[in-house]
Amino acid sequence: MQLRLVGTAGVTTGGAVNRDGIGAVVRFTAGHGQTVLKPVLAGSSHASQNSLDLTFGMRGKHRGTVEVLWPGGVRNRLYGVKPFERLTLPEIPCSYADDWPSRKAYRYCVKTALGELRRDGLLTGQQQARLLRSALRAFRAERPRRPSPHFPFRSKHAKVLDSTMHYVDVGQGDPILLLHGNPTSSYLWRNVIPQLSKLGRVIAPDLIGMGRSGKPDIDYRFIDHSRYLEEFIKELDLSNITLVLHDWGSALGFHYARRHEDKVKALAFMEAILLPMPSLEVLPDEFAALFQALRTPGVGRDLIYDQNIFIEQVLPALTVRELGAEEMRRYRAPFLQPSSREPMLRWPNEVPIAGQPADNTEIINANSVWLSETALPKLLIYSKTGFTTPPALVAWAQVNLPNLQTFKLKEGLHYFQEDQPDAIGGEIARWYRSLVSTAKVR
Image (cartoon, rainbow, N blue to C red; front, top):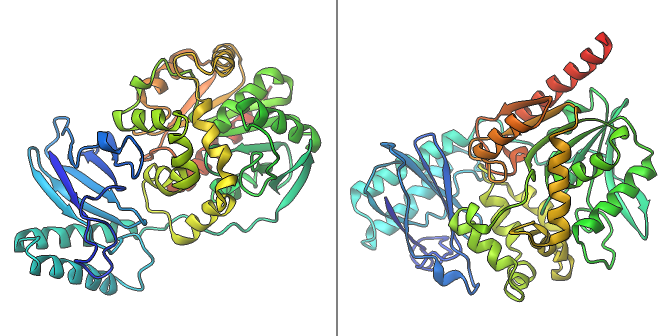
C-alpha cells in the first residue's frame, strides 16, 4: 500500500503541521504481524531520502493498520487498510490517546476537523466516514487502564566519584538492581517497581548525566558510565544482586556481572544488547539512516542538541501507546538545556557497528561469550516486534544462552515498560520466586 501524509495547518482548527507532513513518524502493522516504522526526519540533511509517498508491504495479510505520530505529539490511526490501496491521510488535530473529558468531546473534535477538510474538498464523504470510524475505534482501544505517570518514590542521592547519582530504594532483602538506557531514567521503571519491591530491595538509579543524576564534565562513553555504575554499586555495598536490564543498561549490567559474577544472583533483560551489529544493514532502512545521521559529525549534534530527537521522536515512536503530557514532561526534564544532551548524542555513537568503536565491540563480544558460558539464571522478555532483540536474536539466545527462560509480551517496540509494565513486573516476580524456591530446595 502507498501512503501520503497531509498536514492541515491553516485548514483545520488546531492543525499544526505543514502540508508535506515532514517530521511525522508512520507505523504500519500488517494484520497482527510485524510493525514497520518510517520516520520523516525534520531538518536533517537526510530528510531528502524520505519520500513523501511511503510504501509498505502487506506481508501476505489482507488488512493492516496505519498509525501516524505527528510533530507535536498528536496520534491518528486508520484501521482496515487493504493491499494496493493508495491513501492520503490528513492530520486530524485530535489525538485519540489524550486525556479527553469524554468520548463525546473527542468525537466533536474529530467531526469538526473532518468537516473542515470536507468543506475544503480534501475528503470525500466516504473518506470522512471511514476516518471517523477509525478515530472512534482507536479511542476505545486506548481506554483500558493506562500505566500511571506518577513517580511516588522518595529520591536518594549517592556520592559517586566526582559527582552524585540519583536513585530510588524501595523494599527489603536481596537487591534487585534496575538499569535503564537511552534516553530514559529510573522513571521508566515506575510501574514495575511496586511488583518487585514485595520480593526484595529494589534499587533503580539514573545513569550518570541522565535523569536527576549529576552531569560531570566527562565524555559519557560506555566505559565512563561503567565506571560510575561500578562505584555506585560499591557505595551501596550491594551483593547477591539480581540485575533487571534494558537497552544500554543491559550492556552495562552484563559488563559488570561478567567481571563480578560472585556478586550477581541472576539476570533479567529486555531489548538487550547481546551482540555487536555487523553493519547498519541489519536495521530497517529508516533507522539505518537515522543511526548514520546520528553518527555523522555535525548532523548528529543538530539532531540531538537542536531537535532533541531522542526525546521528541524516537521515544514516542518506539512506544506503542501515546505518552501523556506528564510523562513527556518527566522525560524532557533532565535535558531542557541543549548542553545537557551530550549523553543522548554519545550513546548512538557507542553502538558497536562493523567493529567500531573497537573497544565497545570487544566488550560486547566478551559479554556475549560470557553469557553463553555462565550458569547464572537468565530471563529474556521480548516482543515479536522488538527493535533491539527481534525474533532472530531471541532465537539465537534460546540456542546459545544456558539456564535461560523467555517470556513473550503481547506487544512492544522498544520501551516495553511504558506499554506492558504489569506483564513485565508479573513475569519477573514469577521468575524471581522460582529462583528463591529452587535455592530453598537445594
